[in-house]
Amino acid sequence: MEVEITVLAADAEFPIPPELSGSLRSAGLLEEFKAIAIGKRKFLIGLVNRAVKPETKEKRILEVMEEVHQSRKIRERREARAKS
Image (cartoon, rainbow, N blue to C red; front, side, top):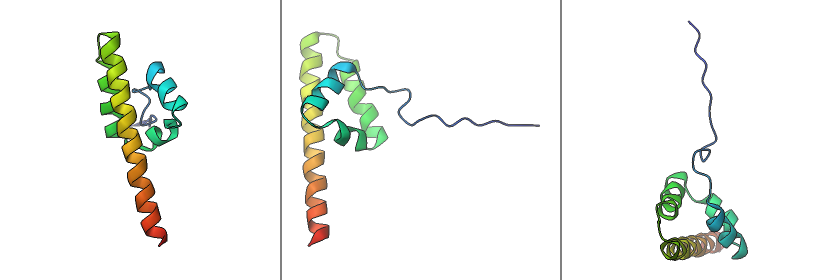
């Protein structure tokens, strides 16, 4: 008996929606978003993907951007403490 296992990239099934990607890139937060744990990233992408109305999608993109910004601030504080 032979078994073949294929490992997919963790986020292969959860591409970043173009609207979210563009907003994150414009704000300089795209790499920070990609550094977030995969489970949280999937949740945030799902929030944007489930929005039906354009204004809801826009609101959720802003919420995701705020979340990513907060993650960046926390990471920067941890790094600063580690250096001192």
